[in-house]
Amino acid sequence: MHPKILAAQPLVTELKKELRHRCEGLKNRGVTPSMCVVLVGDNPASLTYIKNKQKVCEEIGAHFKLIQMPASIAAQDFLSELNKLNQDPSVHGIIIQLPVSESLKALNIPNLVNPEKDIDGFNGVNTQAIYTGTTNLKLLLPCTPKGIINLLNYYGISLDGKNVVVIGRSLIVGKPLSMMLSNFNATVTLAHSKTKNLKQLTQLADIIISAVGKSEFIGSDFLAHHSSQILIDVGINSFDGKLTGDISKEAQDKSLAFTPVPGGVGPMTVISLIENLITATENQVKG
Ligand SMILES: NC(=O)c1ccc[n+]([C@@H]2O[C@H](COP(=O)([O-])OP(=O)(O)OC[C@H]3O[C@@H](n4cnc5c(N)ncnc54)[C@H](OP(=O)(O)O)[C@@H]3O)[C@@H](O)[C@H]2O)c1
Image (cartoon, rainbow, N blue to C red; front, top):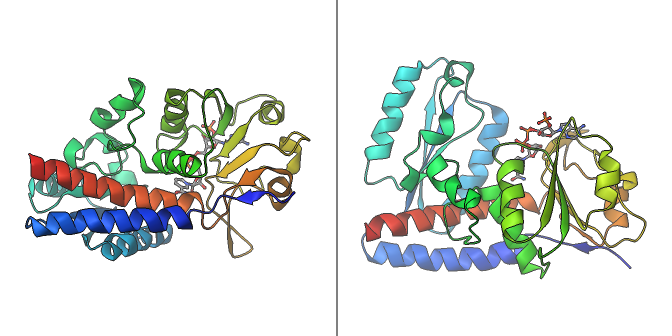
């Protein structure tokens, strides 16, 4: 049997329709949802990610603004610009595009954005809900984990009682994702570069989620023989000039289902961000 491809597109199309409708509702009340991306420097990968966000934002009828700052900006000047955005009532969602430049590395970046405008869902005020066990995906939660759980839900893949191995423990993906999966009653192993016998762990998993950032990292030897495992590929890598994930074709072929790259987790992350923008705007309008 061929593995199922867990493409984001059908769900993204549904969500865009819903978000366009919610955006229209806000406009009818005189408010155009507006997001602002703060980019420090001119990292080309960041510029590509930002373009993807802008496209979906404008497709649903919301307003998009990019504020670019020089890589050499002093922390004090950066904070003062950010403060203006935090207080500007015409801006409903703010993203600080990561990574930031060396000059700002000492700042506590996730907590600098006003929690009400924190559409990346990184501020401690918002992440707190994850640690206290929420399963409410309508909250301002980190976009990649939220997108992955929504995609699994859409394809009818239950997490209840499943063994899930998440590889990669970043603050934006692995850490919040592992906790959110646990909130949905999965039994989660959070693996990283110091994990021993990783393949033995993945071979026992029902679902393997790779957020490592290495092309072909997951070979077919990471999988069990029974072809009943689900593979979620978070990785975005460039290999031979092509965009690839972390999961090899051989591993995909041996799975029950997998998310493609491109067309899987990436678009789910972007649509979750725009959903957060609409939710944040609705919350701010309510006061
Ligand atoms: N599709 C999307 O929407 C989306 C969103 C975000 C990120 N990404 C992509 O996802 C990938 C990961 O990014 P990230 O920011 O989450 O993570 P990251 O900060 O790049 O960290 C990589 C993680 O992988 C672990 N790792 C590295 N080598 C390993 C190995 N040999 N065995 C096991 N674990 C290993 C590291 O372990 P240590 O902690 O021990 O160093 C670390 O936790 C990148 O390709 C990124 O571009 C995609």
